[in-house]
Length: 151
Length: 62
Image 1: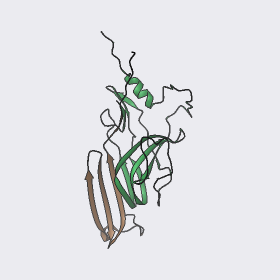
Image 2: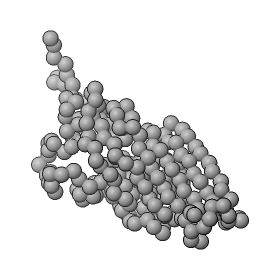
Image 3: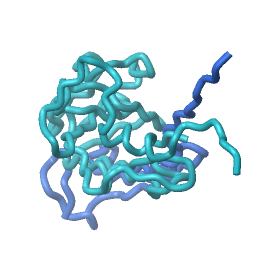
Image 4: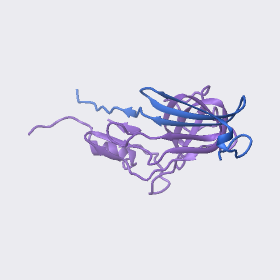
């Protein structure tokens, strides 16, 4: 036998589940899963790795769209496979009967339970919607394709 | 019947136009309904393909 330097795979999954608190300022609002939301942003907005929280700046607006976006269905806990921790929303993000006439190309997933702190930004080809439905479907939730992976 | 900017309308009375796009990041399809030269409905379906990956590293002792 020999020892191997590595980040423990269980830790990767547990980070996604909020098990570890390495800082001193962690305040948990509860023991259940947090509520996540998904907001859409205009192509002219600046949402990126430096985004720390949900912002109304650059968010889409239009008939049928509520500021802050929609709630993310989170019925499946983060898990691991191989050496990868991963998580994917368990249902599509659907914005039903909206009119968004200014081009948008980004969705920000954020934690509305934890002061709207940002989780991830995902871009796609610029779109508009007219009296219709905008649907974002998720990749397969596995170690290769999951929406959020810590490899 | 579909939702339009003019209320619910019979699809059969409208001109339906569809399109799709695919690259490494997404697979997207859209459908539009036109009433003459006016677009009265547009829906979009985006399938995200590209995951968000964070690679973990640990430091050693020197």
